Image 1 (cartoon, one colour):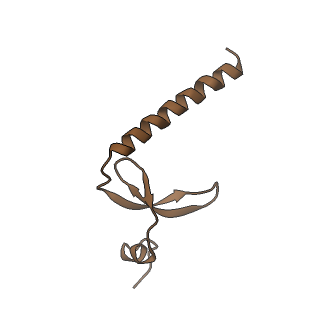
Image 2: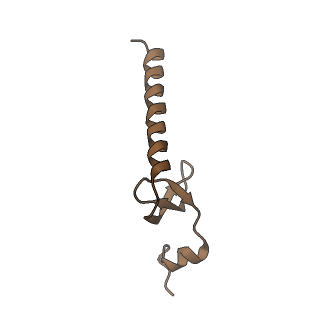
Image 3: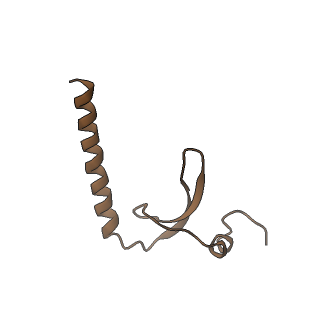
Length: 76
């Protein structure tokens, strides 16, 4: 099998996996939210609310929420 066909098959598998993940995440109730560092570019990470069960990104934590959970290890 040549490279073009292998790549096409892999891209199809990737699309199917992404659809399955979307389906799982859309059915999840997101009851277990946590703040995690999420890679936003190849070199940077930012805190985001994520579902602990399905890994879906749910939003951005506020400064208050970050401080409340002592996310940055700050001493109060």
